[in-house]
Each structure stands twice: as C-alpha cells, then as structure tokens.
Image (cartoon, rainbow, N blue to C red):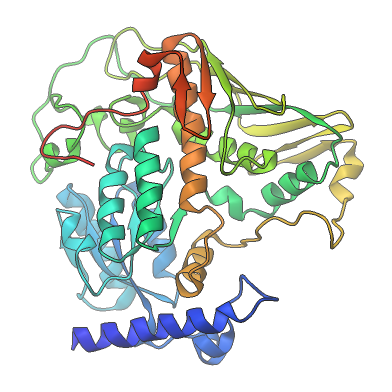
Length: 431
C-alpha cells in the first residue's frame, strides 16, 4: 500500500515539474491546475517529509511545514528521546493520528524510500553527513544555517547535491524577505552610486560559563556519543549541547555562523557574489581563555573583494549597511532606512536587475521540489555564505591577513590556515 502511494506521488511531482517547466513567463509559480481545486493537494500527492533534529529550531521549522497542505511529515529523528517524543506528539496532534515514527538514527529517515524531502536542523557539526546521505538516497533537503561546519564540507555537499540532482534550500530565510531583496536590488542597480563599503553587525554571545566546569552524568534517554558524532570526544556537560553548542568551536562558529550567516548572506547577494567571495580577510577578534565556550566573544574581521569593496563584520548590533558614493541604506528584520530617504521610493524598470523573488522560504522550497528549479538559497549560495563566516573565524583565530582564492577555494601562502578549511572526523564517521 505504501509503495503504491509513493509511485503516485512521484508521478505527480514529475507531472508538476513538466507543466511548470513550460511556464516560462511565471518561473516561480506552480500552476493551480497541478495542485487541484483552490491549490489543494490530495493526500496521496503531498510531499512526504522527515525532520532530523527536533530541538528548538527544528520544531519551529517542522511546525511551519505541518501548517502546509502540500506536505505530510511522517518521521522525526533526534538523539534526545525527550525531543523526539515531543516532536512525534506535535505531528500526531496536527494530523489526528499516530502514524509518525520517531527515530534515534538519522539513517532510518534518509533511507526510507517513501520520504521525498528532509528537514535537517541538527547542530552544525551534524548538517553535512545526514544531508549527503539524504541526497544520495533521492531526497530533497531543507538544511538550517550555517549550511556546514567547514569549507571542505560545503564544497563536498554542494557537489553531491548537484551530482544527484537534488533540491537544497539553505535556512537563510532573509532571502525570502521583501526588504532584503529590495535593498540588494537597489545596490545591484547602482542606486547608491559606486558601492565601496558594507558594514555587518551581529549580536554578542548570549551564553556564558564560569572559568571552570566539571563533567556531568549523561541524562537518561540522551545518546550523547551519537550527538558528538564526528566531533572530538569530550565529557558531557549540559551547556555543551542543544542551544549552547553554538559557542563551542568543535560544533559551530559562534555568532559569526549563527547571526553572521544571515547578514553576510545578504551582503553576498547585494555584492553579486553568490558564487564567489572576497580575496582578502583579516581579523583580530577576542576569544575566551578559560571555561567551556571557545567561540569569539568579540567579533572583528574585514574582507576585501576583487572590485575593491570592503566588508566589515563586528559584534554590537544587528543589521547590514551598504554605503556608496551617492547614498547608503541600512536593513535588518525590523528597520529599513536610507540616506537620502528618497531611495526607499525607488522602483525598478523592466530592463534592470530583478533578483529571485521568494515570498515564503518554505513555500519556495516546495515549489522547487516540483519544478526542479534552484531555490532562492540554493546549496551553492549556502556554501559560499557559510565560507565567508568560516574565513572570518579562521582570520580571527590566526590573527593575521588571509589571501583567499574564491575560484580554487584555497587560502594562499598560509598553509596552516589553509588546513583549517577542513577538520578530521572521529571514526567511524567520514565524508
């Protein structure tokens, strides 16, 4: 019965892709005739999904997909029993049944042949391996930011997604925000004159540990060894895991990859650098000298692009400011300001640059599953934006200026820094 349902759904998706491919004038819209009356989809033709990583962000994303008629969540996965059971309960309550299956091992989700797409909202060091496995087993992917833990992982993941013809949407949802797109269009169309400077500000760390810490017993129902996975083995402490992992370099990159990913991604968009990056990066951030957390407490790095534009990323606020010879514009999730203010009343002509318009990040992902288009935050975009974050952290850790070749994706001259593009994985995990 399950197999028959899977064939019908995949036939539907193929049909939808074929129809949408012919709609050249409306490339981002799936025709309503494909979706049925009023755009509704029969249960047998919904996009079947699994959720891997069901902590705070994972549940938030999963609830978003649960609210969409086009999807059916059938599996949840987390190494924390409490998280996965709570996630299963949320799904079962949403559908009024008990059909959702809860797993400890992500491979039991990525290797189900009845699942079309997976949401991956695990800690950063656990993004790449499940994503690669899902892509190889024919699943499309919605992967939270930052896309990967290292530059090498990003290149391998992007190549894998392309090789297997999958759709991957990175969770940098600001790309689906009208104001962010509008600002980037103004910049790309020269409304600020010649662009010369970009300022990115991000919040400081919002978790602290004392100068010392001691190991704690692993809570019952928490598969801590699996949680560590490819990361180095360390004794358990409650602040090592869940939200706090963001402030430990073994698993993440601090606020540079947490908030910086969002705004640096918009910087790349505005600069037209979605498939490239800077050529020089320097940094002198500050890092803890004791305690559990190891990511930068003060972020300060600078980037230079081949066209001479300078980008500065610092802690102490939240947003992005583009500066040109004829004006400047600032945007964050609540504020849109410009000098002169008349810039905000600008409109684009039909022959000017119009950027990919997505009005809803998750909907864009689902539409692209059907049409097989690249989404607004495609895997290569996610990789390049994450690379900028990783280079900033490497420059601050090294306390020096890096020469970066964005085409070869190598740090030139400084071999020690170049080796930091990748990390060894704890066996048995390998790329």
